[in-house]
Length: 249
Image 1: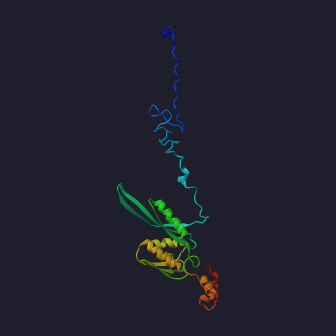
Image 2 (image 1 turned 135 degrees about the vertical axis):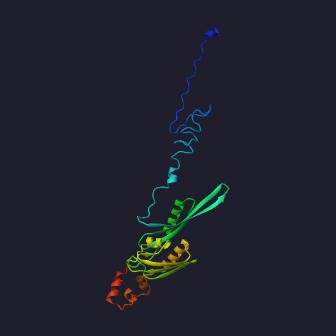
Image 3 (image 1 turned 45 degrees about the horizontal axis):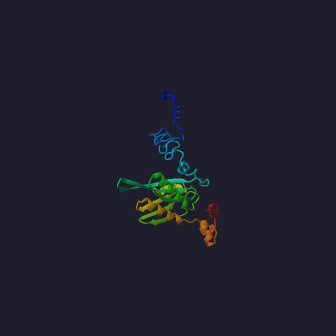
């Protein structure tokens, strides 16, 4: 029987290789059982690293972006922000704010619309209002592409507006929300007056009501079955014929 001192001990196991911390692997562990990934490493389960499960930079990126830019059919629109209203709600943790935006959209060629949007953030409220305005655009006939064909009155709530056509060079004689409507509509010469409330919502609705009553000599002539020259009331003179040929809407 060999002596106990001559018995050689079994070779010790090779030391484990240190865990690698790559873009998708776990960092150094926090305890004896976390050899390959902990909570705070650059690629751990909850550390928010480039390859982590709950804070990765690449996760849900496509969902946040929402795709590429939207195509409006190549049509350039004029967007005017008229009014932003902020409201607050007091809750247990403090105050919660909300925003409401009023936007006017037009193509500068006789089409315009307005929209209203609400959201927790201002940019989101503006985008909602712009989308609503694009869906509610209406066409208004213009004389020579610069002014209205005739005068008009609009009424909504406590707001009353009066619109009058003007000669060339007059400009836009309007203020506040009404100016934004005519600039986006493409009107260059007009005289307006607002009586009553200064609420931008009522003023805009009253203005669009007045614009909705605008008619052109061409549409009236088609409805009555007559010629445009007969509607001008000038006895069929050369001036009336020239004016009739110049009318396109």
